[in-house]
Image 1 (cartoon, rainbow, N blue to C red):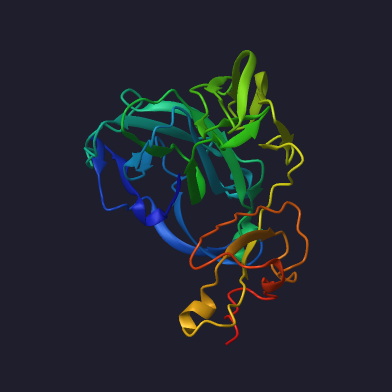
Image 2: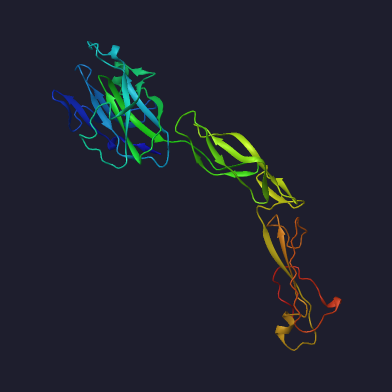
Amino acid sequence: MQNMRMSQYICVTNQRDGLVPTDCLQWEEVSGYDEHMNTIRTYQVCNVFDANQNNWVRTKYIRRRGAQRIHVEMKFSVRDCSSIPRVPGSCKETFNLYYYESETDTATKVFPPWMENPWIKVDTIAADESFSQVDLGGRVMKINTEVRSFGPVSRNGFYLAFQDYGGCMSLIAVRVFYRKCPRTIRNGAIFQETLSGAESTSLVAARGVCVPNAEEVDVPIKLYCNGDGEWMVPIGRCMCKAGHEAVENGTVCGGKGLQPLKHVHVGIVAMYNRQPHSQSPCKLALSQHVSLSIVSYPNPSAPLLQPASPVIQLALQQELLSRPTAASVPTATTAFRQAPR
């Protein structure tokens, strides 16, 4: 769906009287380096010496776009609590991921309330790798990537929120997306793009439509889209009608004996006959018998009169003056050649 920049976040911090919105005194935007020494901008929080931390940061409104299940990819870095001198036991190396559904963009600094219910918890996120004081001295952070999903979602959009409760961490990037099965042709039928279901194990049935010149046999043809955006479990099939055969791996039903052309060069060969005794130049060009052949060539660079497969000829005959003799009808060697005078 989209990548969320850190500038799109607002946050609140914990104070004596409860959760009060501030100007992000606990979460701050800073510069650092990733594992490949690329400069990155992150949101960081590190209040491990203060107990009872409850710091939140959320995204702006994200539209659902018809998806029923949402996936969130998070890139983050966490400080190893054991590497912090004299750190209290309240230090954490995890954070929580939440979401909140809404029909419209109605969130403010105080709504919805910064707590579980109305926010729905997705999971507690832990790092596979944490960084130490040595890494911190070079401002190099070990980047962790975790993906979580949630659903079903049914309202027009939602927000994501991240809760720190006593860690020393950096939130680097968040990517929000959904999965879908792309348009495909299977078993002689066309299946349109289909969104995955509300659960990771869901199978969404898609009804297929036979390709041109094919008809459905056996049972109604279906294909199922799984939670990973992959097609599976084909049922039924379409077969080419009489006089047609499957080509191009079963994606086209072409006429038997005719090779379908992807790139066609069309040449027009004019055949005329000259009327020696005509006094009109126009009559010399417009002969008694005009025959036009439209020839399709698989190779655009091939000579115009080279035999082609297939050859489609359209003869247009028109009686203009009088019938010619067979000896007076030469064939032009190039397209649209003008009759000699």
